Image (cartoon, rainbow, N blue to C red; front, side, top):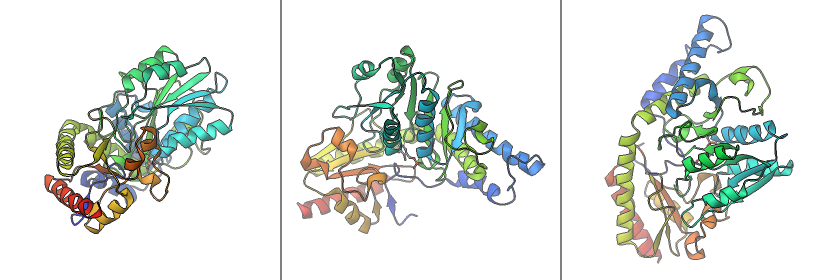
Length: 379
Ligand SMILES: *Cc1c(COP(=O)(O)O)cnc(C)c1O
């Protein structure tokens, strides 16, 4: 792993050694079905419940408010569609933003086809929603506000606590896609008035293919997958025990080291941004200057094609991204960069660098040296 320089932690992260170690027995000797009543089944069940407690503790929720899913996208689907279907008799209006992940945007699109109405809030040039606009958008038909905690492309952190207050004052449920935030920000669902929250293990050094959803107790949300009684009747199917164990361990480790991790990332990010601004002309930072994830540096290089830059850096063993991994391969400009009103000369030239655990200042120097050379040649 060390002959590549991995700078794309917003796309995914590698599984930590301690996480893998806790998962391994559940692929082999501890193979019991958690629904089985004999001891090997009960041990699997206990492992799941321990993971549930770890997730609950990390966000100040109750274990019974945590549901395990197959990924962050599934958590978003289950929360948004589940709450919408559950509250159909009360209203049909949902409020979201234009810069959400496609798991949220496309869930909303599907609901629109089924008769729900969705307001997509604008964001300003930094990617922040406007709280006044949010208040004005609420009607007596509004049942749900879904706004992401932090954006996956530009790293901007939304005013979650204020959104929670507005939602509560208006008797509207508030879901937040925290897939980028968990493992990077301290989240307290009670203090922040969050009713529902999505997370995904592979964004915080856990395995791919497992997510969790918090839904506050007594919210009447509908299941999307029929089956057995698993996950309190909200998601039928035998649980992915090993991965759930991995998610639990990963979130516990992440929360324990949150401050230290953030300080490290912040130092790398600030060094990178200031050096780039010093050494390369016609460059622009995308996203809010300070209200942003510590590890995110999304910068646009005027007149440069981000996709070509990515491939050139790959030849040098550097992994970065142009926007979100989910929209790579599509030629459409990113919906997030379009929404913040980025000018045409900068729109194609964005490069998202997201730092993580194993990165060093030497990695940043190597990236900067390569960027300087490539951009000087191309311009
Ligand atoms: C990665 C991501 C998702 C999707 O999570 P998966 O586990 O990959 O399905 C959703 N929302 C945001 C903000 C993300 O960054």
